[in-house]
Length: 185
Length: 229
Image (cartoon, rainbow over all chains, first blue to last red; front, side):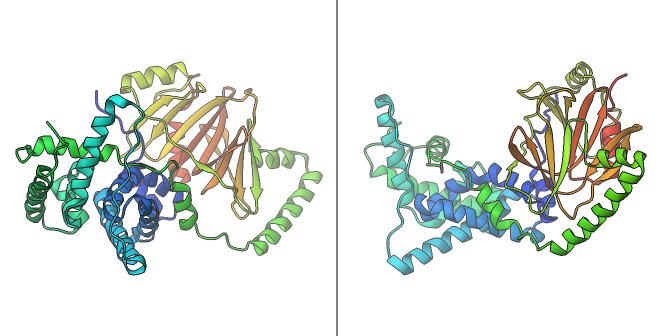
């Protein structure tokens, strides 16, 4: 049985939004906002991720005339999001000069999964200890399961650069984890 | 820890990603509010429209057959159309999740009193579902068709900008209304934003086809699912 789409594709929605259909763009927002929050959190922290996400969507709407509806929306939007989130961090530093805070994970009420939650937190701390560009490429690959081609568009890199950056980022993450006793196989 | 494979480490990272805190509410409405252009002053249009209504109203009182024509333009079946100065806030209409093969689609459409589409609209795949209210919804890539009995309690209402004209047309010879452009559909007190819509009644069933396409394409789609007689 051929899978049937659950609704208009991103390209169709973007095309309608470009013609002024804000409701079509709203569908795109709902479809991609969770992903945007995850990535923005790694750049500017959970406290600013929501604002950065909202701002990125607004900028994307106003830039739709530059978007090729035949191409994938998600990597194009992710590029806008990363720029907005980075600018938010730069602005914050200028004002209050604080370090980037780690995103907040779900609290767990189940004691049996507390250890697992601690492992997640430890892995997140290791991730946040990496340079921003490493965090970004890892988030695109493993949080969002983007292909190397999509990551190249999202981060404005050559596909070959994505592969090598991913490899180095994973190596650096292992080094960070090697100093932790909590994360176990 | 240094001997984690990429796959193992990637799986742990994916698990972390799945647990990043998400906001409790969507930002979609706030984004939409910032993206929607401010409603222009339509006082001039209102005056023109008011004058047109006055002229037409005078004509209705004088000529009996015209009264039916006006009544039809202001509504159809269990749906009334009302012109407003400003559209109220509304929630987006979400299309149902797709399910079923083409064969299942034809079976369900037949049971709902709809004929199977004689042809697909070029480039538009078809998805379908029966929603919680038992309403059959057939979805094209650019259109959603729903149907409900005209005897159902609860009149639906369409709120249309004052300067938008509702068009009288037909679907397979049956009287129909075309509401062009974005408007608001009110059902049981809840507002939903709607795309252009084609309304028609056949066999005591009210049909609504919502689409981003123009009237000609909407009629073509609607006429491809005319009710089984």
